[in-house]
Amino acid sequence: MSTPLIIWASAFLIYAIFWLWYVGIRKPLLKFEIDYYLKEYSKFDNHSETDLAGMRQFLENDTGKSFVMVNSIVLKKTPDLVEGVKEGDTSLQTLINYHKPFMKMMIKRGGIGIFQGRVAGRSFDVINIENAGEWQISGINRFRSRRDLMEILISPIFHEKHELKFAALNKSIAYPVDPWFQLGGFPLTVGLVLALGAALLHIFLI
Image (cartoon, rainbow, N blue to C red; front, side, top):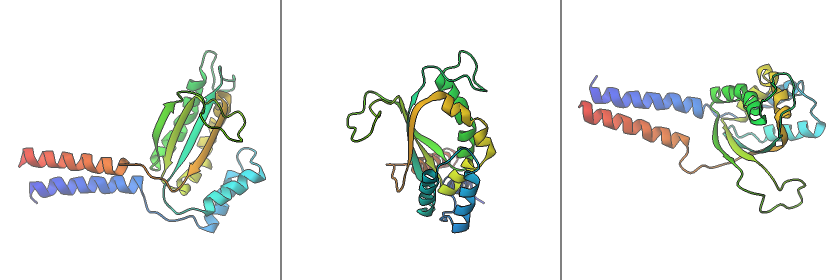
């Protein structure tokens, strides 16, 4: 096999592996899967009937494609001293400790954080929402599918440090967005980087 063919075949193979991790095989949830996930999900915490009904609607609207979760939060001045929180810990440190196992499971399933930033000022436009004028941090997490999200939410590992979330947060809101679009996007960036790397190898080795 010639050197150029090896270079470009390797680049294609790496991108194919990346694509399977990031995009995966897109199949909407089936009814038996939805019932299973809701049954397992209801075992953790005290979810109201309204919460479970909203989750069911979200799962039943599955397209099999990726979605993003939009988050806005305000931290407590000091975290509650629950198990896992030491004297002197900040609320941000506590929240990071809560997120570590969550992020590991998310990345394993093709999810990534695509945006995070500190809020620059008060909300400009608030209509019929109480206590929504001030936020501290906003972030957007991309999930490969609803199936991947539910695998995380029903994992005992996810719930082991769940109390840290409530210890750190003063208020928060999170809601899913689907369909969504990101100009450029991660797959395009990875593809261009691989193509550039393969092109440079081709130039210098041939």
